[in-house]
Length: 389
Image 1 (cartoon, helix red, strand yellow):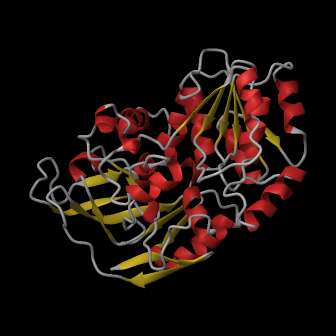
Image 2 (image 1 turned 180 degrees about the vertical axis):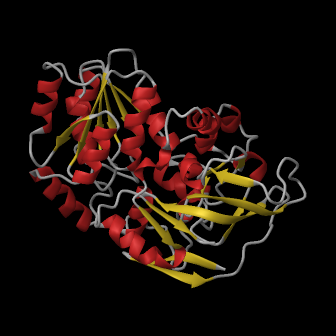
């Protein structure tokens, strides 16, 4: 089969690789019909994960058709159309039983690696380095889905791939980020980053009852989509964000702040130059520019929600601000399985059409071009969807 393989920093290629096969009775093989390039994939593409190996198959946002099932699968049939959460969960461990699916204790065979970096391991993840299991990803013609009886959700309502594909990651991620804000009627939420996760955070904040959402970015196409989603916008290259938020909130600050940017944040301050220099010298793993700003801009007693991916060690976080102003920080890899059915209901009811942010449809053979335009924000690119079959 054909698959998108990581070949080194800023280099991917489509290669012929062996077809996946059933390895466990709870496995299924899925023929991929749609797969997306995620902002998290860019952290791998740009070389920020040391646990990548040349030839690793990328991709964790995918869906398709079941073509084979293991002997232990009872609820899936060949021909079923399914969406597959990026987090691999067994459904049986303590965390899965508590609906903390991204903390599954049984799905990461390389848990020892994650434990050295994080203390304890997260779950295994599709196409996201050997730190999270080394699983082949979904930017391929076929993929093996472990624990498919838990991690493959049938779609039987006639909705298009474009409408349901993002239930595998970014829609639940944006929704969980907003849910973590504990939104109450009349509140104002600020969102750093109007990329795919930020846009779903905006939509989700309104679904959960926010009165106002303020989006912070610099790219015109993203700011336009944020406004179309109902948000007010600030361009950080054109104004001081702290002053802008103070003006828009009468000096109080947003009730909650969402950092939907993560470890590759950009800025135009001396802090950005400092972080870039330390990253280049391998003295810092992440650029927490947006996180610092979100903490300092949040109102007293507010919540900072962090769906943006961070990998390791962050420098100069104003934790004194967190403690002295009674801020709460809520974060985590998304427990996608928890949200699939309620968010699917929102789509079916017409509350949201997730396809609004797709700007590029490509074939799998065009993956290298897709990564390039998405990484460099060219051609108005907000979201790339590829079609392997």
